Image (cartoon, rainbow, N blue to C red; front, side, top):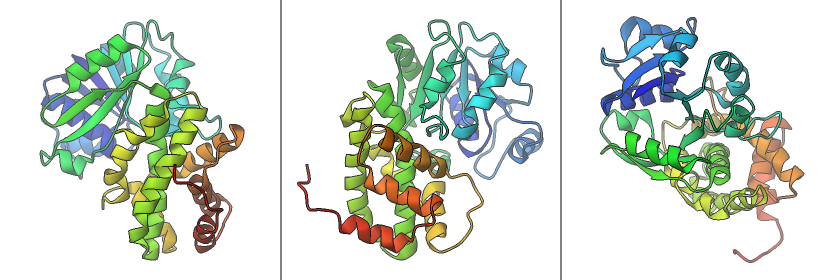
Length: 320
């Protein structure tokens, strides 16, 4: 299968490496002036992995789109709309778009597949999402994991799961596109909360964070029309270990640095996602205490310790 992976950051480069490793014809496409692209183009390697010569590296977006049967996109979720404006200038009929990123558009509250759906006829250009746990640092060592591919198109997601599954990644067929996307995006917000707890020395509280965070995201998924049980699957709860406890998670690291008053340099998708989910909670009248606490700390300057105290002072209620 001819696959073009658009985006050559940490995860994008890992996807290209993985899809080549299992036998697909892969092109890695990035912006010509981006440092991560320049590194891959010049040295065929980055800080995480080495590209074999079989992976083509190009900054020609039109060429990358034209050659591909499957277009995999792995960029910052908040830039998807502007990036897809350029992608959509090409003929996408007969191609499949796979979104390998986790987020919700902060300005609109739209899921990423909804954004792409504004540009394409999904009967001609089906859209899928690839979510779940895993870090490049583990995959390149041969440490396996499980992930999910979901889509509104049953035939497409079955085809992708069969084409992408290997001994390194076992894929499952998702059955709830809303839940898969919201769950995956929300996991990054809970990851920031976990990092804040680490930064404060409250690491043991992450068990409570996981349990209660999953409950509130389940409520949001249900309010948006999805299956609340998706929050307990690989897209959300299944991805917690890779985010809430990993030394490599950008979102957890961001939260820890935030609690310590340090500036975190790299992308943490959960920051803008906390704003998007906070607004969705208000729009759909869903109680999201943890998401709201993270949002207030990041965007309104709320005191972290005050926010934690308020969570503990909430009225007594049944667990389920």
